[in-house]
Image (cartoon, rainbow, N blue to C red):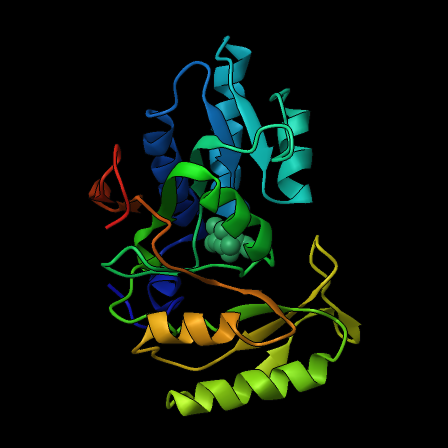
Length: 251
Ligand SMILES: O=C[C@H](O)[C@H](O)[C@H](O)COP(=O)(O)O
């Protein structure tokens, strides 16, 4: 278990990291059955799941899927996976997604790719949420990965100051950075918002921070996913281990 994301990745070759992500995706796919309504996550680990699901669909598996980003939509479409929207299919059986960090209580930090808002809406519409990750994402305390917060473009600077004040009240001090897509060009989410990356370090009371961030006008959502994941498939050198319950409720 690492407190510093990336530390173990330095030791792990790019190939084995991808192999582990794929192993976690393959293990999660075993729970997918005919007729399921699925949420499809975003990011490099979720992309392995979508790719493997595409192969099962080509073999005849019938599922209907709601993607959590335009990138995932494009990938799923290219693989011939049947797609829907939450308006057409408002309740899902299972969402499979990646994470930037997770702890033993199945709490997550997500949004490294900027898809956190749709990911959270889709996960909340699902009976179960499986997280797929390589073992480097497991931490004792969330927060080494800068927490992404999605904010409205209107009044963005004021909203950032408000986030800073609220965090300071919880003893969290760290640089807040407006995310750029490239130098001089703001990153814009699929929903048309900005992302602020908050490098707080260890977040001792993630529940309190989540509640206080949600109460700030201008904050659209934040990357703390609490009470949503029902199981985490963790791929390491020894194989895939499952945290949580693949058939049941969140911890
Ligand atoms: O916004 C992006 C998502 O939350 C991703 O699921 C998360 O960043 C993990 O991505 P990856 O699997 O590429 O590490």
